[in-house]
Image (cartoon, rainbow, N blue to C red; front, side):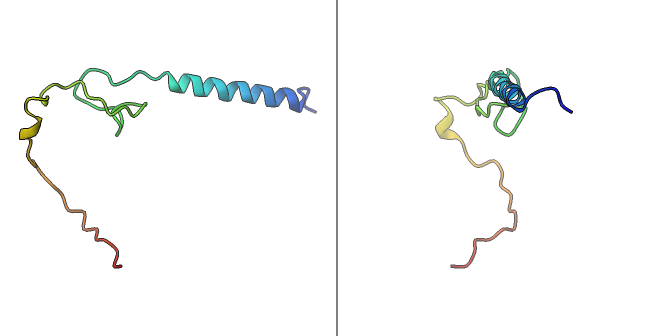
Length: 77
């Protein structure tokens, strides 16, 4: 038989879940460099880039560099 009461087990579970949330939310933001660790840039999905090639002065001059067709089509209405 288990010597820990269900109330104590629930408290331990709540403590572990709280710690997981706190530790998970303290993820470092985008690290300097050219690579993103995840689709959002980092584990916190900040979408922040430390690159400086594009700035306020040249952003308006950007043009389409490439595109790709997935073959997907819109559903018929």
